[in-house]
Image (cartoon, rainbow, N blue to C red):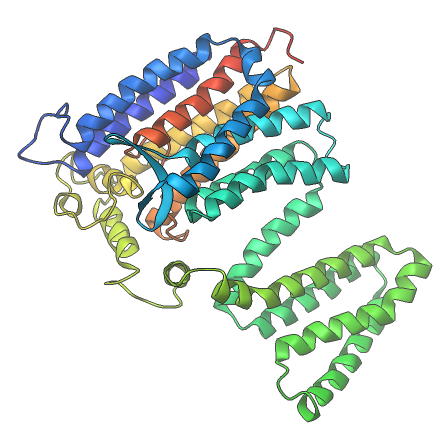
Amino acid sequence: MDKATIIIFLVMIIAGWFNIYAAVYNEEHTKILDLSQRYGKQFVWIIATLIIAVFVVVIDSRFYFFFAFFIYGGLMFLLFLVLLLGKDINGARSWFQIGAFNLQPSEFAKIGTALALAAYLNARRHDLSRLSVFVTSIGIIFFPALLIALQPDMGSTVAYFALFIVLFREGMSPYLFISGIIMFILFFCALIFKIAFVSLALIITAFIVALAATRKWKLCLAGAAIFASITFIVYLLSNTIFKSTGDEMILFLSVILSGAVYAFYIYSKRSLTVLIIYLFLFGSLGFLNSVDFAFNRLLKPHQKERVEIMLGIRSDPHGTGYNLNQSIISIGSGGFSGKGYLKGTQTKFKFVPAQSTDFIFCTVGEEWGFLGSFVVIAMYVILLVRLVILAERQRSDFSRIYGYGVISILFVHFFINIGMSVGIVPVIGIPLPFFSYGGSALWAFTILLFIFLRLDASRTEYLV
């Protein structure tokens, strides 16, 4: 077993326990082992976690390989069952109530999804250049994400898209990965700026890239002239006949028509570079013009408000933006070295909602300041780097792919949780691994991690 990873894990869960104690500290219940309080319950979860970790590592490593799809199927059944029989908490039907304990299947389903993806790609020799392999891999990721979105639990849904990092590592086309990043950037640009301005900037950028790639300035000037002429004609028609056409749609239609004019050149000259640039431009403009529909029709009002508050489009410090506003105040008030353990005023007076779960990082920032925050972030970075090293030394494709699944899920949880606490990511409700209060998340992250440590300990053994 990799001792360095286990030590970091133990330090994290102990530090998380003490921060939960500080976050919900009750002067009438000062004992940290008081089972009537969250910190007492968390201690029980931690003891159970250590037992689970031992149980995970004593199982033969081949069990996780041969039963990967059975584990995946069983957890998908639980995700379906929770939609019918689950307990509704905060508007989401995501929990099974078992006595006094609530179990969240979506946390454990990440384990099954990572195992199934690793088993499938291993069986197909991770040949993601084949369309059937790529589509099936996407389906393995999307199926649980869809079931969780129906609960609805958008925070957990987003975490599943972290597994696209695994696909990129295993050979997914970089164009697809870059396209995903561009879509993410364009989504926020469309909300901050006018779509017509963003569209024009994309078109200009496309011409500049084409010029740099082909070094044919006459061709680019001719293309710009054709585009300008078509845009002028479409603009005149829109103002005389189709008066409801917006500027962004005029530019989009002009790009489509310009592409039709230049199709002959692309075909005759076999200019793959120009074709790729055009397709990127066409796809980007199409996505850009669909953002408004998606944002206003698919997201719920409170989700839209959170995104707008994060981007500074609107301000609601006493309503939807209250959580984020108090979180930033709490972290900022800690200064360089913090106020001291159990001395955080924002925490003690319960200004920050969910301060032991989604906003546990606020307690770190307020009581331990910049130094404490730096140490916590450094621990996560060291853990992730260590896991990358472990993943790359695997002899089995299955173990390596699963390892990157663990890395991807932990990274996205870490980035989003801390990001939403400091206002660079919308508040979507996602736990900080090994720090946030709760049994389901702690157990799930532990199983996820220790399965990989078990596979790593057996890396010299033969695994199909």
